[in-house]
Picture: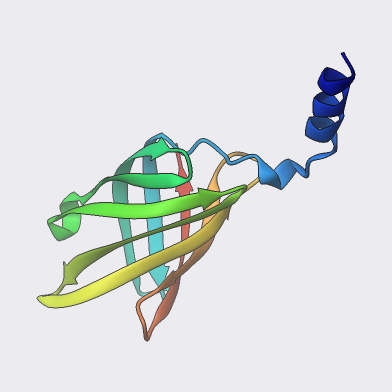
Length: 120
């Protein structure tokens, strides 16, 4: 009984961010660079523990790629390689689950930075 109470107390005192959000499912990821380049990719993520993976499709830019990433508490990171106007680009998304359940963060290309939001 004492061990059960200790375990329950440890769970109750654990920081809320320590429990990983469940990101599995279909997300519409809206990206913007300098207010000029905008796009929406539909990503279907599967989460296994902290690992995240799945296809991201942007029909407008003829993109169908496999994203890989991780979830750590409310923090979410994923990336993929794509082509934009014939140029290869690596996109790193780093953000967090917001109180309303959406995602929000930055996109890094190794040069230009953008912003993203995502909703289910």
